[in-house]
Image (tube, rainbow, N blue to C red; front, top):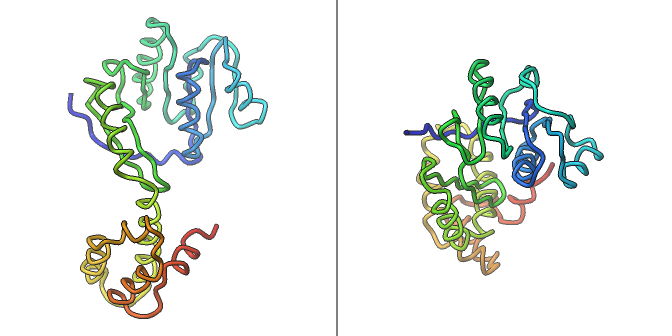
Length: 223
């Protein structure tokens, strides 16, 4: 199986999780972090899911799954320990052309969830195409130590620089050499060591006056 890599925008989209245990809780947390409108269906519910329901962050249906639960959903995640039920969820979702993931059962999924590393808006996704989740976890742990918080800061900085340059009249293609000079410099080390004066000097050398570390990040991180 060769999977098509994609990042889904689920902000404000209806997503269903069938199951109420610890696996379902993790799936729900990730969906909420990405802005999904989450419904959970399960006769038994973990305390963490109950807390989310009490806080009105999810819709909770404490009963057995029904095929009608899929109506109006964008995607569904099956996170139960009932193999028959998991296959039913997959079959029902497929009949409705819905995105469907069954936890730890790639053979009945039409998409699988990668192991991820998140540093602010920087997301690194690792997939073994369902062959070895354990190996994906090991790769994630290796990469977590390599890509620390300075990479999130650099991404915010580059986003602010790009937004400002795009307001200028010349073609966006002209920006690429400037971006490369910054990215391929020692800026990660400068951020890590909080050498802000040196960062400002680097930005001045590449971009000219008017670009400072603190000002760019302040503007990028404003709500």
